[in-house]
Amino acid sequence: MNYKISSDYQTPEAAPKWQIEKVLHVKPGPAFSELVRTKTADYLSHKQIAPGSIEWAANNFQQADDKLTRRLGWFTRAHPYVTNEGRMLVGLYSDGFSFSLVAFTDDLGKSWNVSEPIVGGGNIQPSFAQASNGSIVAYMRDNGPAPKRVHVSESADQGETWSMVYDHPELANPGAGLELMKLNDGRFLTIYNDTESGRHRLAVSISNDEGQSYPVTRYLENRNESEGAFHYPSIIQGKDGMLHATYSYFVPAANGKGQVKSIKYASFDTDWIESGTSESSKKERSH
Image 1 (cartoon, helix red, strand yellow):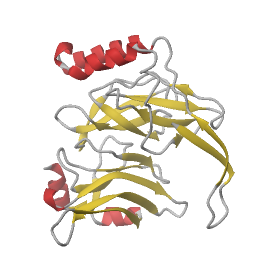
Image 2: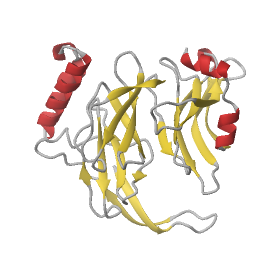
Image 3: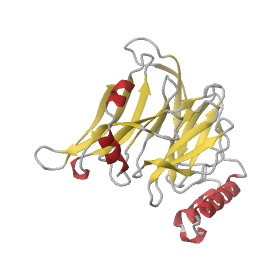
Protein backbone atom coordinates (compact mmCIF):
# COMPACT_ATOMS: atom_id res chain seq x y z
CA MET A 1 0.00 0.00 0.00
CA ASN A 2 1.32 3.44 -1.00
CA TYR A 3 0.55 6.82 0.51
CA LYS A 4 1.42 10.40 -0.37
CA ILE A 5 1.96 13.53 1.72
CA SER A 6 1.07 17.07 0.65
CA SER A 7 1.60 20.39 2.42
CA ASP A 8 -0.05 22.35 -0.42
CA TYR A 9 -3.60 21.11 -0.77
CA GLN A 10 -5.95 24.03 -0.07
CA THR A 11 -5.73 26.07 -3.26
CA PRO A 12 -9.29 26.55 -4.55
CA GLU A 13 -10.13 24.47 -7.63
CA ALA A 14 -6.63 22.99 -7.74
CA ALA A 15 -5.43 19.47 -7.06
CA PRO A 16 -3.05 18.89 -4.11
CA LYS A 17 0.66 19.09 -4.84
CA TRP A 18 2.24 15.91 -3.55
CA GLN A 19 5.77 16.20 -2.16
CA ILE A 20 6.35 12.71 -0.74
CA GLU A 21 5.31 9.20 -1.73
CA LYS A 22 6.08 6.17 0.41
CA VAL A 23 5.14 2.55 0.98
CA LEU A 24 3.22 1.69 4.14
CA HIS A 25 5.03 -1.46 5.21
CA VAL A 26 2.93 -3.73 7.42
CA LYS A 27 5.18 -5.59 9.85
CA PRO A 28 3.19 -7.52 12.46
CA GLY A 29 5.26 -8.25 15.54
CA PRO A 30 6.51 -11.66 16.74
CA ALA A 31 3.38 -12.20 18.86
CA PHE A 32 1.08 -11.87 15.83
CA SER A 33 0.64 -15.59 15.16
CA GLU A 34 -0.16 -16.40 18.78
CA LEU A 35 -2.59 -13.46 19.01
CA VAL A 36 -4.45 -14.72 15.93
CA ARG A 37 -4.84 -18.15 17.57
CA THR A 38 -5.84 -16.82 20.97
CA LYS A 39 -8.33 -14.27 19.68
CA THR A 40 -9.83 -16.78 17.23
CA ALA A 41 -10.31 -19.32 20.04
CA ASP A 42 -11.93 -16.68 22.28
CA TYR A 43 -14.27 -15.57 19.48
CA LEU A 44 -15.33 -19.11 18.55
CA SER A 45 -15.83 -20.04 22.19
CA HIS A 46 -18.02 -16.99 22.69
CA LYS A 47 -20.05 -17.97 19.62
CA GLN A 48 -20.12 -21.62 20.76
CA ILE A 49 -18.58 -22.78 17.48
CA ALA A 50 -16.19 -25.72 17.26
CA PRO A 51 -12.85 -24.43 15.87
CA GLY A 52 -12.42 -27.42 13.57
CA SER A 53 -15.67 -26.61 11.76
CA ILE A 54 -14.46 -23.23 10.51
CA GLU A 55 -12.31 -23.37 7.39
CA TRP A 56 -11.22 -19.73 7.62
CA ALA A 57 -9.73 -20.30 11.07
CA ALA A 58 -7.23 -22.87 9.77
CA ASN A 59 -6.38 -20.58 6.86
CA ASN A 60 -5.76 -17.66 9.24
CA PHE A 61 -3.41 -19.77 11.36
CA GLN A 62 -1.43 -20.95 8.35
CA GLN A 63 -1.08 -17.45 6.92
CA ALA A 64 -0.17 -15.92 10.29
CA ASP A 65 2.61 -18.46 10.84
CA ASP A 66 4.37 -17.44 7.63
CA LYS A 67 6.57 -14.35 8.03
CA LEU A 68 6.07 -13.34 4.41
CA THR A 69 2.32 -13.85 3.91
CA ARG A 70 1.43 -12.04 7.14
CA ARG A 71 3.19 -8.93 5.78
CA LEU A 72 1.84 -8.91 2.22
CA GLY A 73 -1.48 -7.91 0.73
CA TRP A 74 -2.81 -5.48 3.37
CA PHE A 75 -4.79 -2.59 1.92
CA THR A 76 -7.55 -0.19 2.87
CA ARG A 77 -11.06 0.79 1.78
CA ALA A 78 -12.65 3.33 4.14
CA HIS A 79 -11.35 6.77 5.06
CA PRO A 80 -8.40 7.14 7.42
CA TYR A 81 -9.38 8.61 10.78
CA VAL A 82 -7.61 11.23 12.88
CA THR A 83 -8.37 10.94 16.61
CA ASN A 84 -8.85 13.87 18.98
CA GLU A 85 -5.29 13.25 20.15
CA GLY A 86 -3.87 13.58 16.63
CA ARG A 87 -3.18 9.93 15.84
CA MET A 88 -4.09 8.82 12.32
CA LEU A 89 -5.68 5.38 11.96
CA VAL A 90 -5.80 3.49 8.66
CA GLY A 91 -8.04 0.44 8.63
CA LEU A 92 -6.48 -2.53 6.81
CA TYR A 93 -7.70 -5.88 5.56
CA SER A 94 -6.25 -8.62 3.39
CA ASP A 95 -7.75 -11.16 1.02
CA GLY A 96 -5.43 -13.66 2.71
CA PHE A 97 -7.08 -13.24 6.12
CA SER A 98 -10.64 -13.01 7.45
CA PHE A 99 -9.97 -10.18 9.88
CA SER A 100 -8.63 -6.63 10.13
CA LEU A 101 -5.63 -4.63 11.30
CA VAL A 102 -5.05 -0.94 11.97
CA ALA A 103 -1.96 0.95 10.85
CA PHE A 104 -1.39 4.08 12.94
CA THR A 105 0.97 7.04 12.89
CA ASP A 106 1.62 9.79 15.46
CA ASP A 107 3.81 11.89 13.16
CA LEU A 108 1.62 12.22 10.05
CA GLY A 109 3.18 9.37 8.14
CA LYS A 110 6.87 9.65 9.00
CA SER A 111 6.63 6.35 10.87
CA TRP A 112 3.96 3.67 11.28
CA ASN A 113 2.99 0.95 13.72
CA VAL A 114 0.44 -1.84 13.43
CA SER A 115 -2.24 -2.83 15.90
CA GLU A 116 -2.97 -6.28 17.19
CA PRO A 117 -5.33 -8.20 14.86
CA ILE A 118 -9.06 -7.54 15.14
CA VAL A 119 -10.25 -11.13 14.89
CA GLY A 120 -13.86 -12.17 14.39
CA GLY A 121 -16.01 -14.04 11.90
CA GLY A 122 -14.91 -12.47 8.63
CA ASN A 123 -14.76 -8.84 9.79
CA ILE A 124 -13.00 -6.70 7.18
CA GLN A 125 -12.74 -3.11 5.87
CA PRO A 126 -12.89 -1.22 9.20
CA SER A 127 -14.24 2.33 9.49
CA PHE A 128 -13.83 4.42 12.66
CA ALA A 129 -15.38 7.01 14.95
CA GLN A 130 -14.31 8.24 18.39
CA ALA A 131 -16.76 8.16 21.29
CA SER A 132 -17.03 10.89 23.92
CA ASN A 133 -15.09 8.74 26.42
CA GLY A 134 -12.13 8.64 24.03
CA SER A 135 -12.56 5.04 22.86
CA ILE A 136 -12.37 4.24 19.15
CA VAL A 137 -15.27 2.35 17.60
CA ALA A 138 -14.72 0.26 14.44
CA TYR A 139 -17.53 -0.93 12.17
CA MET A 140 -16.64 -3.70 9.73
CA ARG A 141 -18.13 -5.53 6.79
CA ASP A 142 -19.38 -9.06 7.51
CA ASN A 143 -17.69 -11.59 5.23
CA GLY A 144 -18.60 -14.48 7.52
CA PRO A 145 -21.57 -16.83 7.91
CA ALA A 146 -25.17 -15.84 8.70
CA PRO A 147 -26.62 -13.95 10.43
CA LYS A 148 -25.15 -11.09 8.43
CA ARG A 149 -24.58 -8.07 10.65
CA VAL A 150 -22.23 -5.12 10.86
CA HIS A 151 -19.26 -6.25 12.98
CA VAL A 152 -18.11 -4.00 15.81
CA SER A 153 -15.00 -3.71 17.98
CA GLU A 154 -13.71 -1.02 20.35
CA SER A 155 -10.27 0.20 21.37
CA ALA A 156 -9.46 2.01 24.61
CA ASP A 157 -5.86 2.81 23.64
CA GLN A 158 -6.08 4.75 20.38
CA GLY A 159 -6.35 1.72 18.13
CA GLU A 160 -3.51 -0.47 19.42
CA THR A 161 -5.60 -3.24 21.03
CA TRP A 162 -9.19 -4.20 20.31
CA SER A 163 -12.13 -5.83 22.07
CA MET A 164 -13.78 -9.05 20.97
CA VAL A 165 -15.71 -8.53 17.73
CA TYR A 166 -19.50 -8.64 18.09
CA ASP A 167 -22.54 -8.26 15.84
CA HIS A 168 -24.33 -4.92 15.95
CA PRO A 169 -27.85 -5.60 17.28
CA GLU A 170 -29.57 -3.35 14.72
CA LEU A 171 -27.37 -2.97 11.64
CA ALA A 172 -27.60 -5.66 8.95
CA ASN A 173 -24.83 -6.19 6.40
CA PRO A 174 -24.90 -8.41 3.28
CA GLY A 175 -21.12 -8.67 3.04
CA ALA A 176 -20.72 -5.15 1.64
CA GLY A 177 -18.58 -2.11 2.38
CA LEU A 178 -19.84 0.59 4.73
CA GLU A 179 -18.62 3.71 6.49
CA LEU A 180 -19.04 5.06 10.00
CA MET A 181 -18.44 8.72 10.80
CA LYS A 182 -18.88 11.23 13.62
CA LEU A 183 -20.98 14.22 12.65
CA ASN A 184 -20.04 17.79 13.51
CA ASP A 185 -22.69 17.72 16.26
CA GLY A 186 -21.19 14.58 17.86
CA ARG A 187 -23.72 12.04 16.64
CA PHE A 188 -22.68 8.89 14.77
CA LEU A 189 -23.73 8.31 11.16
CA THR A 190 -23.52 5.08 9.19
CA ILE A 191 -23.93 4.64 5.43
CA TYR A 192 -24.50 0.99 4.48
CA ASN A 193 -26.60 -1.63 2.71
CA ASP A 194 -29.17 -2.44 5.39
CA THR A 195 -29.98 -5.96 4.17
CA GLU A 196 -28.65 -9.43 4.92
CA SER A 197 -28.71 -10.30 1.22
CA GLY A 198 -28.28 -8.02 -1.79
CA ARG A 199 -27.13 -4.44 -2.23
CA HIS A 200 -30.35 -3.00 -3.61
CA ARG A 201 -30.92 -0.69 -0.63
CA LEU A 202 -28.47 1.95 0.54
CA ALA A 203 -29.32 3.57 3.87
CA VAL A 204 -28.02 6.48 5.91
CA SER A 205 -28.71 6.12 9.64
CA ILE A 206 -28.04 8.46 12.58
CA SER A 207 -27.41 7.45 16.18
CA ASN A 208 -27.98 9.71 19.19
CA ASP A 209 -26.15 7.37 21.59
CA GLU A 210 -22.82 6.83 19.83
CA GLY A 211 -23.87 3.78 17.87
CA GLN A 212 -25.90 1.82 20.42
CA SER A 213 -29.11 2.42 18.43
CA TYR A 214 -30.04 4.00 15.11
CA PRO A 215 -33.61 5.37 15.25
CA VAL A 216 -33.17 7.73 12.27
CA THR A 217 -32.85 6.30 8.74
CA ARG A 218 -33.37 7.49 5.20
CA TYR A 219 -32.58 5.74 1.94
CA LEU A 220 -30.37 7.01 -0.85
CA GLU A 221 -31.47 3.96 -2.86
CA ASN A 222 -34.35 1.61 -2.13
CA ARG A 223 -35.26 -0.85 -4.88
CA ASN A 224 -36.19 -4.46 -5.45
CA GLU A 225 -33.23 -6.81 -5.55
CA SER A 226 -33.36 -7.19 -9.35
CA GLU A 227 -33.50 -3.44 -9.95
CA GLY A 228 -30.01 -2.36 -8.95
CA ALA A 229 -26.96 -2.68 -6.76
CA PHE A 230 -25.29 0.14 -4.83
CA HIS A 231 -21.83 -0.58 -3.49
CA TYR A 232 -18.94 0.76 -1.43
CA PRO A 233 -20.37 4.03 -0.09
CA SER A 234 -18.12 6.79 1.18
CA ILE A 235 -19.18 9.93 3.03
CA ILE A 236 -17.72 13.15 4.45
CA GLN A 237 -19.18 16.28 6.08
CA GLY A 238 -18.19 19.84 5.26
CA LYS A 239 -17.77 22.68 7.75
CA ASP A 240 -21.18 23.96 6.64
CA GLY A 241 -22.80 20.69 7.75
CA MET A 242 -23.51 19.36 4.27
CA LEU A 243 -22.88 15.65 3.76
CA HIS A 244 -21.28 14.40 0.56
CA ALA A 245 -21.62 10.73 -0.41
CA THR A 246 -20.38 8.68 -3.35
CA TYR A 247 -21.13 5.08 -4.22
CA SER A 248 -21.10 2.62 -7.10
CA TYR A 249 -24.38 2.76 -8.99
CA PHE A 250 -25.32 -0.35 -11.00
CA VAL A 251 -28.78 -0.45 -12.63
CA PRO A 252 -30.27 -2.46 -15.50
CA ALA A 253 -29.75 -0.91 -18.93
CA ALA A 254 -32.82 0.65 -20.52
CA ASN A 255 -32.65 -1.81 -23.40
CA GLY A 256 -32.71 -4.74 -21.01
CA LYS A 257 -29.21 -5.86 -21.93
CA GLY A 258 -26.63 -5.77 -19.16
CA GLN A 259 -26.08 -2.99 -16.64
CA VAL A 260 -25.28 0.68 -16.57
CA LYS A 261 -22.36 1.12 -14.18
CA SER A 262 -21.35 4.48 -12.77
CA ILE A 263 -20.35 6.38 -9.62
CA LYS A 264 -23.15 8.40 -8.08
CA TYR A 265 -22.67 11.53 -5.97
CA ALA A 266 -25.29 12.80 -3.51
CA SER A 267 -25.26 15.86 -1.26
CA PHE A 268 -27.69 16.36 1.62
CA ASP A 269 -27.86 17.43 5.27
CA THR A 270 -29.04 15.80 8.48
CA ASP A 271 -32.41 17.56 8.24
CA TRP A 272 -33.03 15.69 4.98
CA ILE A 273 -32.23 12.38 6.70
CA GLU A 274 -34.45 13.12 9.68
CA SER A 275 -37.37 14.38 7.58
CA GLY A 276 -37.49 11.10 5.67
CA THR A 277 -37.76 8.84 8.71
CA SER A 278 -41.19 7.29 9.13
CA GLU A 279 -42.80 4.31 10.80
CA SER A 280 -43.21 2.63 7.41
CA SER A 281 -39.51 2.97 6.59
CA LYS A 282 -38.59 1.63 10.02
CA LYS A 283 -40.81 -1.41 9.43
CA GLU A 284 -39.30 -2.00 6.01
CA ARG A 285 -35.80 -1.67 7.47
CA SER A 286 -36.56 -4.20 10.22
CA HIS A 287 -37.58 -6.75 7.58
